[in-house]
Each structure stands twice: as C-alpha cells, then as structure tokens.
Image (cartoon, rainbow, N blue to C red; front, top):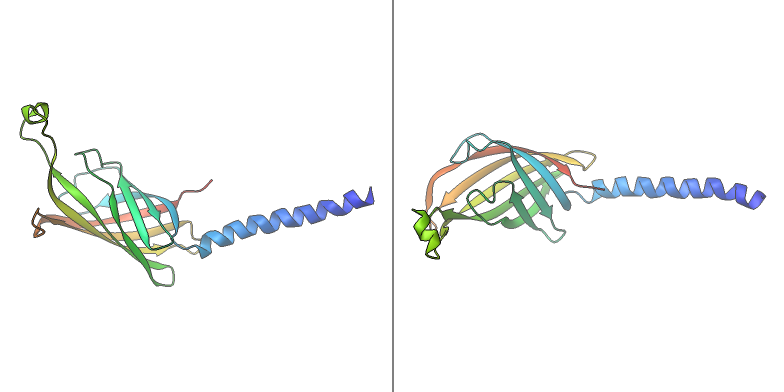
Length: 167
C-alpha cells in the first residue's frame, strides 16, 4: 500500500512536467507548425474581399504553404514560399501564388477551356510572434505581376492576426 501512495506524487509530477514541456516546446518552436489567420485587406485589387482567412504551414526547414478561403474564387492554387527568423520573435515570409484569368464566356469552359494562367502574385509578410508562441500579428504587402513577370497595378496591403492550430 505504501508503494502505491508514493507513486501518486511521482505520477503527478511526471504529468505536470510533460504538460510544461509541451507549452515550452510551443514557444521554442517559434513559427514552425500550422496556423490559422484572419486577414484584413486594407488596399489593392483584393480590398473588397471580406472575411478572408489564411491557413499556413511553416516547416522547420524554412519553407511554407499558405491557402485561403478565397482560393476557389476564382480557382487558384495555394501559395508556396520561404520564411526566416529576423529577430527575437520576429519573422519574415515571402510566398507566391498563381493568378488566373476568367473565361470570356461559358462556351470557353464547355469547349475544354477554363481559367487560363494570367500571371502571379508575391506576398511579403512581417510577423511578430507573441511571447507564448501561440499567436502572431503581421503586416502583409502583396504585388501582382503579368504573364511576362512585369509588375501590374492592383498590389496592396493587409494585416493578419494568427493563432496556432493545436489539439
């Protein structure tokens, strides 16, 4: 019986240490992981978009993927890019997405056409991670380019409030 009584504090201490380790690991991992962001577009071609949300994955090797709840309007790909630490809890990400041109008519789609390539966009995001490692605030600048890679009008700015996705 005494053996079991001694086990209770030992097990409790082990569980507490494991819980603290998970929280500390989150802060130490910095930006690495999966995130959900609420984006407010303040200027540019996409400024009329409302309730914009991003899903991000920041990989340990410095690559990243972003997808938006607007990826299907018009059909578009997720964005792919890179990120790096720039200071204490400060990061910068640069990621790119394809822009599609809407078909001129439904007949184009019926004949096997569709949303043709029409350039690309580049987003540069400056991210400030909260001290607990579970949320961030960021500013985003986006630029648009035509099919030849030349800058076009429509670029703009946005802000984002992100939160870590966790169990």
